[in-house]
Length: 468
Image 1 (tube, rainbow, N blue to C red):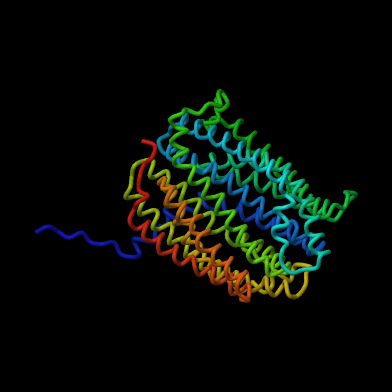
Image 2: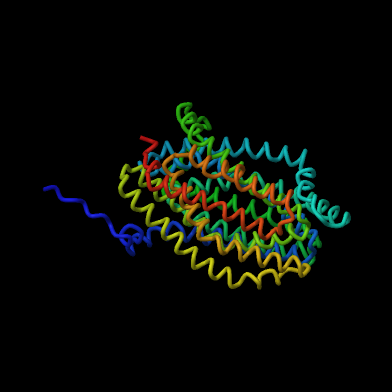
């Protein structure tokens, strides 16, 4: 008689040993530290602007929402090539890594030039798109004025940001996560110090308000770029792909075609997803300027806590991508199951802390009581849905690690536009429903994605080596 194969228990399927978690944390913790410090300083930056005035804070937050679309454009542009980079690294193919780097550089340059042209020609109209709700004419005019000031300076920081993303993403995909973290910490320190000096005009520096916040951010971007680029090219024995990196900027046509096929859906996905998030904010903003300010406070706090599931999602892409590149499909599936479970468990604990602290965060801002109360409730709602978001994030990166970019496009950006934005648009414009209830319903709709994501991951449609 043939023996029946014993199914693994839930514990062995979803919980790893000490060695497994040490491996995951070795990748995830540096990313968490870098993102954590970045978002913590963004929080302090936000509070500093918020203490100057609500209009300054709202103007800067609207511009940051627009720049967020650009940031994810760059992320999507380099991520398509990044799938190949991780698998080339798994095969120890340094020339393959160089070629994917050059592709990233071209893509990021094109996106950055296009974004700068767009913001220079249509920036004021884009900011005004968020100022159509309730509020006095003077408050709206002031918010537009401060937003435009902030945007014009922030554009100067896009080129160094682009270079850091190209270099840091490649370094991470090759297992070097510490250097981007160190550079990020240095940049953050510069940002924090010059925020204080330039926003408030301390120690003889000019009092620039919201312009000072933008100037400090731009300066920190250049510091980060100098550190990352100089370190990479001075340590070619540790980072072999950096040797001869600029010997040519040509990318083989065959590889370009492969990356475009896999990467274009990712680029469109990240861009459309970010645009969808910006559109969701615009839908909520029709309820008035208080909602714009409360969302800004809530999103800034959320970003600090979201670092856990974001770092663990990035780790899925790196670790699972490398295993897929080596051809061990069973190990890739087992590792992925454990990483998704670990992400959800960690984020459940983080969400509990965030929920308890939610009423206290908005008190740090110099704004009115209505904004503080609304922001507190928005933070609580987001905390409640954090385990769901952790599962979705890890699922997305699982599908992406195996090159299933068409599926991730449908799973992510098509869903946000067809479901989330549609719900928010209809409820905000055609009902008198409170913004908190609209926000909750939009979050609940993501349960549909959870079911779809679970089925796709369980079926193993992502288990493939795309560089052999």
